[in-house]
Length: 105
Image (cartoon, rainbow, N blue to C red; front, side):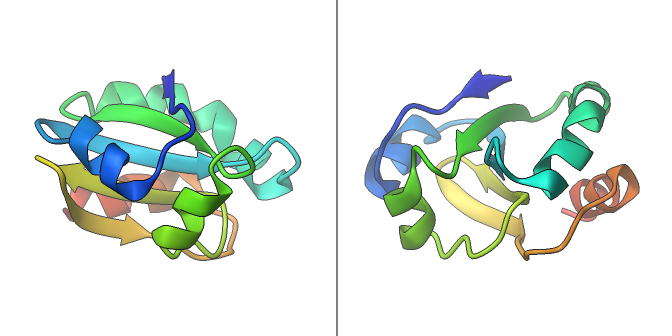
């Protein structure tokens, strides 16, 4: 999984201008993020139509504020530079919940 460099929303949308992406917002200190992290390789394999990008909340705090990411772990789907769907809240997320979210896009 690629790790996103520090950038603002405009730069992010340019980076994601073509293709399908899942942004995985996380932080090293977050216990709920550590809970879902072991399932991520399998989720990535099951949804290979998307490119997954890890976004460290602490390194991209301004981007998170611009995008209204108020809780982590969170997932935002982009297609051709536009946000398509989001699974954003402060709750712990299970593998099934993330897969259900991605299946319903």
